[in-house]
Length: 442
Image (cartoon, helix red, strand yellow):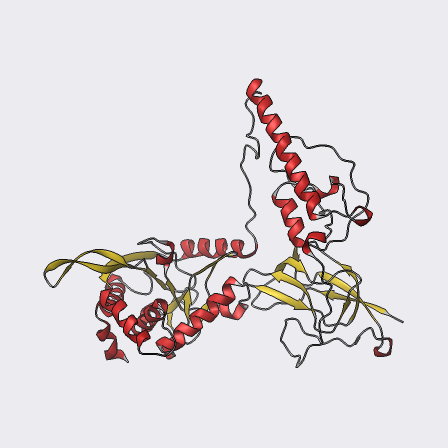
């Protein structure tokens, strides 16, 4: 006889207490194997696929996509039978994350459907329309429709379509993608008529159509909420200061061209800048530290775990290259490429996003020259690098066009004074202007 077991949102590590459901990977009625990923969740640090420790038939799911759940909340229930009944192993694996403790996970069993034919369920709460204009009234739906497509639901949510009031053209009245798109077109037409009427007979001053007098409210949660908390804490706790300098990067760029022409893996500009940073931190270790106010001590760290800013669709993240001080330019280049790809795919682990001791911020990729970065708490400094572009420059006593870059260093004034910060930044600039200077530290 089958036994129904409840699987709860596990502890995902790194002190995380909650996660948001991004995509359900199974439906009610699906057969799942032990350690098969059943849901993709977003924590404050990364996207994680959560495997189910039980094998059997999914009988219920808890939480719609977009719902935030605390650790320990029910995720789903599974009807588990004996191995003889073919419904899976009721022992369970005890795993909480994909790849932990299982030598070989059983093959996944998932339903494959065409995206355009995927039905959508009504959300648990009415979606707020993007406009206050009325939409055609449709009798409310009776009963929920099984949730299958996060993309169709997202389309409805972004365009203010209330799925509970939308008739479905699919089997048994299921809502299809075409139904949502049709409702979007009707809503646009209705709003256009309302706008024409307002031009003929303007109403008394009210909140603008499409919003409220208070504007649009965007929740600070997930990654964005964590970033907001960390930046606020940095500004509140760290007395930071910034110094900057322009440097002639012409020889630096020539050196990179020569390195790549010599064969082997291509070396990135970021990797060369990172190599210079680690050499500078060896000379000025005060900037590779953190402040322990409880003990009233500055803790200088032996290893350099170098964070670098990476822009993704989820927002700004800071992956960390562990033991950057022990890597050469080729190894740094490969690790930057690997972490950047993982960041853009949303597959960075919590361990790859924590533990940094110094951050390198190449904001030149955004086409800007300078910035005053906010320190990545609890670190003590961040080096910012602007774009490298041709500019007029006095070279060997004559005006010439050279490749120039602006460097900025934001530092915690508790760990050092301006002399140390200026010495660090000047050394970085000297290495960029004359790469041979770096050879003295190799």
